[in-house]
Every structure is written in C-alpha cells, then in structure tokens.
Image (cartoon, rainbow, N blue to C red):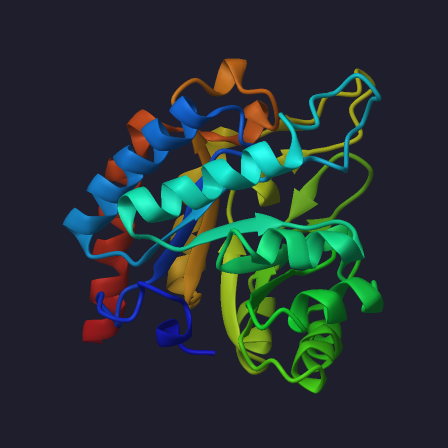
Length: 272
C-alpha cells in the first residue's frame, strides 16, 4: 500500500511518517471536532499526513457496565462529519461481519482489532468493501504470522492493507513491544506502531484497564528509529474523564511537542 491509496494523504510530505490519532471512542460531535481541529492544526504545521481515529462502538469491554458507544449510526455520522469538515481521512474499528459494509459507507479505513485479526470472515468482509484495511497484530501473534492476515486481504482482491503493532502480551497485565518485529512486518506491507495501546495494562482486578502514558514518547521514539511508516495513538483533551481507555491516552496538550520531536528524529534518520 502507498499513501496515495488513502484519500487526502497523497499530497503531503511523503518522507514523513503518517499519523492515525484521535479519541478511543466517539463520545459526541463537539468532542470529536475539537480533538480533530487541534490535531489537524499540529499535523499541518509539521507536514504529517493525518487520519482521524475514533471507535464508533466498543465491543471489547472488561465489564458489562463499561461504555460501549453513543449509537452506531450516530457515531459514524460524526466520523463522516469530521472527515468532511477538515478534509481528512478517517478510520474506525469493526467487530462483526455486518459492521464492514455499514462503516465503509462513512469512513476511509476499516480497522480489524488485534483480538479479531485471525477471524477470516471479518477480515474478508472488510477487504471486500474496497476500503483500506488496517490489521492490528494480535497480542498473541508473532510478527511473521501477520503475513497470513495480509494475504487474506489481498486474496480477497484488495491490495490496500497495512499492519499495526500494538504490543505483545507479557504475563497477565502488561504489554511489551518487540521492535524486531517492525522490519519483519514491513516486508509484508505498510507498518504502523500503536503507541498508546502498547502501553495498556489490561486485566486489572478492578475491571478497568490501566496504562503507562509516561512511556508514550519513549515507545514512539523507538518506533520512528526502527522505521515505522506510521504511528497510531489515542489522544483526548481530558483523558481522566474519557469514557474509554483514558489511562493510556496522551493528553492533547502534549501532542505538538511529541510530534515535533518525532519529526526531528525522522529527519535525522532520512539524512543519514
């Protein structure tokens, strides 16, 4: 896959990394537009190709009383409005086969969650929409195993596929990023590092996932240094009160400094 296969990315700085970023879940129109506007301002300044990310529903929850969404079509319409308002592509994750066609009518990229990436019917349904498919590497999978998920998309007639590493389960409540996997997965296609999900601490006894946001810049710097094509991160103007994954999100106020540092690293690497 090339950046030109994602709408609205083709005319931006090709030698830079691209960014998928936004809130974990769409909580409402005002919050989505507020976050998108801030990120668009920063990424335009730094010439970073940008895709707005937001889940239209959350199917993988620890507890039955956890937030799952504001309604599927309501959230998807907000995603479409973000894309149209700022002329940027959008991405959302799908969990069931019938989600593929529904979400594809609103967004540019369909994301397969890590815990579902071996579900053949789901991957094929996403591929058959013709949209770009972002495959999250399973926390339980080796980098080498992702070639088979990529092949499922391509064998379905869709060459627009990318892989996102979101860490590997280490024990019961921690994630580790094995950066040896980045060059391996780049052999199979465009490769992204999901910085914030890599810092989750799942399976807490409280039923609420924890995280290590203090390590975001460390993991992001290492990803750029190892040659990822893009970065994925979740950001919010009030992580402490976000309805999902607030424990590992980056506060929006810290995004510009982080991205400025990462662009400097990429420029240094490109100049070697």
